Image 1 (cartoon, rainbow, N blue to C red):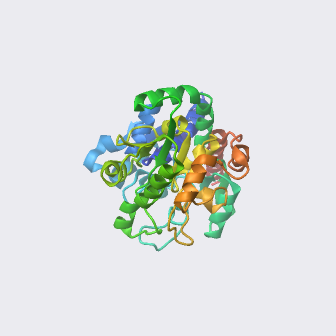
Image 2 (cartoon, helix red, strand yellow):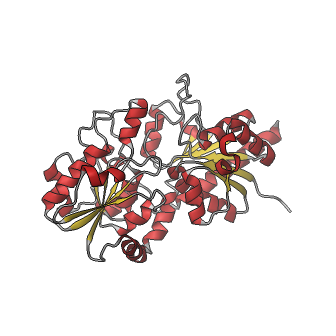
Image 3 (cartoon, rainbow, N blue to C red):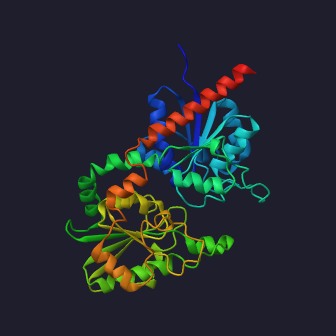
Length: 384
C-alpha cells in the first residue's frame, strides 16, 4: 500500500488557523498524512472545529522553543511543511517551523491569511534580509496581491494564486446564516429584528506602544467616530464591540470611555473565544478599521463600514479601501449616512465576490499547490 505524503502543518494566530484548517481537511480527504500543530489561539480554533491536532504549546509549556519544534520535525520527517507565515517572528510557531524546515532542507509552503503587512512577513528579525522567511511556494489570494509582492522583490515563480481558503468555509456558512443569526442573537440578548452593528477592533494602540507603529489613528479613534455616527443616524441599534483575541484593548474600556445613548446600546464582548465570524453572520452592519473580517462581511453581503480617521498617507492596511472598493469614512456625517445607505461595495456583492474569487474553490486550489510542491520535491530528490 502506497502511503500518502507526510505534511506537517502548524500555525499560532487566529488568521493562520482559519486559513489552514480548510486546506488540512482537503489534504486529509485526499489521503495525505497530515500532522497538524497548534499553539495559542489557533488551538482554540482547531478545537472548536473538532480538528485532530497536537497543541504543541500546551505540550511543552515553558520549554517551547526552536529545539522542541526541531525535535518534532525530526520525529515526523515530513515531505513538506505548511504554515501561515504570520505571527511573532522570534517566538511564533509559524516561524519556528520555517526555521526548522530550513535546517532540515524540507520544502516550505505558506498561505497568506490576509492582505496586510505584506512587506514585513518575510523579513529576518534583524532586518538584514527582507525575504529571509519567504517559503518555496506561497499561496496568495488574488492577482493584485501577486503584483504587490513582486514589487517587494519576490519572484513570480514563488507565488501561486489560490484564493483565500477560508472563503470556502464562509461560503458554506452563508447557507446557514439564518440559523446562526438566531443563535448568536439569542446568546447576546438581541431581538431578531433589532439592528446589530458589529465593530471589529484591532489592538493598534498596543502595537504603537510596543514597536512605535503609528498609522495616524488607533481603535479608540475609530470607535469614537463610529459611536458619534451611530448616534447621529437616529436609528435604534445595538453596537457589539469585538476585540482581536491577540490583545484585547477596546471592549473592556467601552463602559468607561463611551456610553450607550437613547437609541444606541453598546455591548462589549470580552470573551476572546467568541467566534468573530459568527458575529459577522448575525449582524446587519460590519464596521472596523482594516480587519480581514471586513472582507468576509462584504463577501457575505453585509453593509461594511471602514473607519480610519487620520490615516497617514501610504499606511492603509485595509485592502477594501486601498483598492478603492470602499471609502474610508472620515466624518460623523459620512458614518451616519453610510449606516442609512449601506452600500456594500463598488460593484455590489457580486462584484466584490468576483474580485476575491468567491467561486474558485480556494481550499482545493491551495491543497493542489501543497501536493504539487511535494511532487516537485520528490522528483528533484529522484534525480539527485
